[in-house]
Length: 108
Image 1 (cartoon, rainbow, N blue to C red):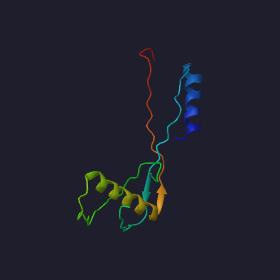
Image 2 (cartoon, rainbow, N blue to C red):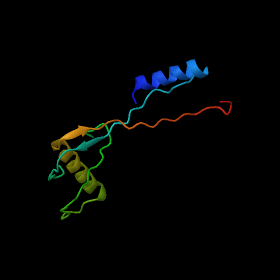
Image 3 (cartoon, rainbow, N blue to C red):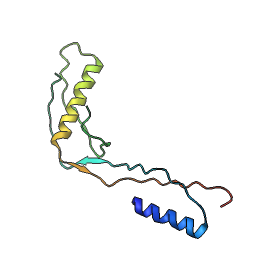
Image 4 (cartoon, rainbow, N blue to C red):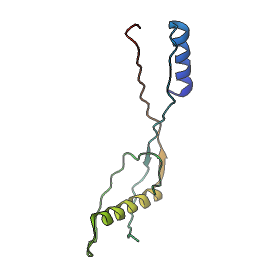
Protein backbone atom coordinates (compact mmCIF):
# COMPACT_ATOMS: atom_id res chain seq x y z
CA UNK A 1 0.00 0.00 0.00
CA UNK A 2 1.23 3.45 -0.84
CA UNK A 3 0.32 6.90 0.36
CA UNK A 4 -2.27 7.30 -2.41
CA UNK A 5 -4.00 4.07 -1.36
CA UNK A 6 -4.27 5.34 2.21
CA UNK A 7 -5.63 8.70 1.04
CA UNK A 8 -8.32 6.91 -1.00
CA UNK A 9 -9.28 4.78 2.01
CA UNK A 10 -9.39 7.88 4.23
CA UNK A 11 -11.67 9.61 1.71
CA UNK A 12 -13.97 6.56 1.57
CA UNK A 13 -14.19 6.45 5.38
CA UNK A 14 -15.20 10.12 5.38
CA UNK A 15 -17.72 9.84 2.53
CA UNK A 16 -19.30 6.48 3.44
CA UNK A 17 -19.20 6.56 7.24
CA UNK A 18 -19.01 10.32 7.90
CA UNK A 19 -15.93 9.82 10.09
CA UNK A 20 -13.13 12.36 9.76
CA UNK A 21 -10.05 10.17 10.18
CA UNK A 22 -6.72 11.63 11.24
CA UNK A 23 -3.61 10.08 9.74
CA UNK A 24 -0.11 10.60 11.14
CA UNK A 25 2.63 11.25 8.60
CA UNK A 26 3.76 8.02 6.94
CA UNK A 27 6.94 6.43 8.20
CA UNK A 28 8.35 4.18 5.49
CA UNK A 29 10.46 1.29 6.80
CA UNK A 30 12.87 0.35 4.02
CA UNK A 31 15.35 -2.52 4.37
CA UNK A 32 18.54 -3.37 2.50
CA UNK A 33 20.28 -6.65 1.77
CA UNK A 34 23.31 -7.80 -0.21
CA UNK A 35 23.41 -9.87 -3.40
CA UNK A 36 26.57 -11.97 -3.05
CA UNK A 37 29.01 -13.17 -0.39
CA UNK A 38 31.85 -10.78 0.39
CA UNK A 39 35.16 -11.55 2.08
CA UNK A 40 36.93 -8.60 3.66
CA UNK A 41 39.89 -8.01 5.95
CA UNK A 42 40.24 -4.85 8.01
CA UNK A 43 42.90 -3.49 10.31
CA UNK A 44 41.86 -0.84 12.78
CA UNK A 45 43.69 2.37 12.10
CA UNK A 46 29.93 6.54 10.29
CA UNK A 47 27.50 4.41 9.27
CA UNK A 48 27.30 3.88 5.50
CA UNK A 49 23.67 2.84 5.34
CA UNK A 50 20.55 4.71 6.31
CA UNK A 51 18.34 1.65 6.72
CA UNK A 52 18.65 -1.58 8.70
CA UNK A 53 20.43 -4.38 6.85
CA UNK A 54 18.69 -7.77 6.89
CA UNK A 55 19.52 -11.31 5.69
CA UNK A 56 23.24 -10.81 6.27
CA UNK A 57 25.38 -13.21 8.33
CA UNK A 58 28.76 -12.13 9.67
CA UNK A 59 31.44 -14.74 10.44
CA UNK A 60 34.65 -13.63 12.13
CA UNK A 61 37.31 -16.16 11.12
CA UNK A 62 40.24 -14.58 12.92
CA UNK A 63 40.82 -11.73 15.33
CA UNK A 64 44.46 -10.99 16.16
CA UNK A 65 44.45 -9.85 19.77
CA UNK A 66 48.22 -10.02 20.23
CA UNK A 67 48.21 -6.56 21.80
CA UNK A 68 46.32 -5.51 24.91
CA UNK A 69 43.05 -4.56 23.20
CA UNK A 70 40.03 -3.33 25.07
CA UNK A 71 36.59 -4.63 24.06
CA UNK A 72 35.80 -1.17 22.63
CA UNK A 73 38.81 -1.31 20.28
CA UNK A 74 37.90 -4.83 19.09
CA UNK A 75 34.27 -3.78 18.59
CA UNK A 76 35.36 -0.73 16.57
CA UNK A 77 37.57 -2.90 14.33
CA UNK A 78 34.78 -5.42 13.73
CA UNK A 79 32.31 -2.62 13.00
CA UNK A 80 34.69 -0.99 10.52
CA UNK A 81 35.26 -4.34 8.79
CA UNK A 82 31.53 -4.98 8.45
CA UNK A 83 30.91 -1.49 7.07
CA UNK A 84 33.76 -1.87 4.56
CA UNK A 85 32.48 -5.29 3.45
CA UNK A 86 28.96 -3.90 2.97
CA UNK A 87 30.38 -1.10 0.81
CA UNK A 88 31.92 -3.76 -1.47
CA UNK A 89 28.74 -5.85 -1.64
CA UNK A 90 25.95 -5.29 -4.14
CA UNK A 91 23.34 -3.63 -1.96
CA UNK A 92 19.65 -3.81 -2.82
CA UNK A 93 16.93 -1.63 -1.41
CA UNK A 94 13.99 -3.86 -0.50
CA UNK A 95 10.31 -3.01 -0.61
CA UNK A 96 9.07 -1.07 2.42
CA UNK A 97 7.38 -2.87 5.27
CA UNK A 98 4.11 -1.34 6.41
CA UNK A 99 2.26 -1.65 9.69
CA UNK A 100 -1.17 -0.08 9.77
CA UNK A 101 -2.93 0.61 13.05
CA UNK A 102 -6.60 1.55 13.13
CA UNK A 103 -7.90 3.05 16.37
CA UNK A 104 -11.55 4.00 16.83
CA UNK A 105 -14.04 4.84 19.50
CA UNK A 106 -16.46 2.27 20.87
CA UNK A 107 -19.16 4.42 19.20
CA UNK A 108 -18.11 3.10 15.78
